Each structure stands twice: as structure tokens, then as C-alpha cells.
Image (cartoon, rainbow, N blue to C red; front, side, top):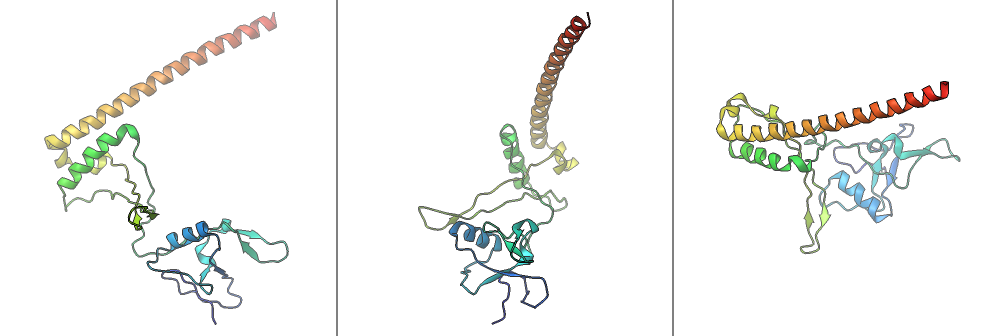
Length: 208
């Protein structure tokens, strides 16, 4: 029976000398769950014959086996390299900071209530992490929002009073943060000046 990869959109099959290895699913239930979550295949249950090829693992997932020239897969290795048709490229996960959460909610509400098809806003990335629900036995999703910036607004939107109010709130909060950082910087400069003065005094005493 020819071994083949069970990952979505992967047609890799075992070929001698190809350098591609095939791995069975781990026995550890937690590691196995991570494999299945990253594979994103619905209603998929691996068997003892199911394999995943080495193209879906990062180089750090392998270690050099002292008894063989071949590299072996680590016991806690998790596949992270997949090709999905709807996978975003170069997109980072950014959490909302506590101090900007209220402004972020206002911006999200304004953007959702007044869509503009002539202007492309930066997308809000949502990551779904399947979790078992104790009540329904189903799966729930934990979502993360990306930060919204002032550059996401059009100039015509900034003229609107509602958008003006929201932008002013953001600017006021950022100005307060800048002021706090400036005060902290001044205190640090004062401490450095005092320590420098003490150090110079000690050096002068030692030179005498």
C-alpha cells in the first residue's frame, strides 16, 4: 500500500529517494488534537494507516538520530505548514489593549453601521480556536480582533460628526499616553542625573 499524505490540498505520495518522510499520528491525545486542529479537515478521523508528510513540519520539529543518518520527528512536534485556499498571507494576530478597548468598540460599530464599498478597510482578522463546550457538547470559537487605526477612515468619513467624535476620543487617549510617557522619561532623566552626580563625587573623593 503506497503511503500518501492526508493533508488538505497535498498530493504527496511516497517515492524512494524523494527526501519526503511520512509520519503516523501521535498517540498522545493532546498532541493529536493539535494536529487535527491545524489540518482543518471536518469530520476527519485518522486511522493507524493515516500519514502526514514532512512538508507540513518546520525544520525545528526534527532532531538528528544518532543511530541513523535520517532525521527523526520530535514527540511533541506539531504540523504548522499547510496550503488552504482561504488562508490570509502575512497577517498578524493583534490583541486589543485594555486602555483602547472602548475606542475600538466605537470604531467597529461605526464601520459596521456604515459600510462603504468604494473604500477597502483593513480586514479584521478572526482566529477560531475549537474548544469543547460542557453544555452543548459542540465547539465554541475564541476570536481575536485586529487593531483599527485612524488610517482606516476615509477623509469623507472624518467630516461626519460621529466619526469626528470617535477620532477625537482616540487622539485624546493617545495624547494622554504620550504625556504619561514624557513624565516617566523626565523622572528617569532626573534619576540618571542624580546617579551621575553621585558617581562623579565618588570618583573625585577617590582621586583625592
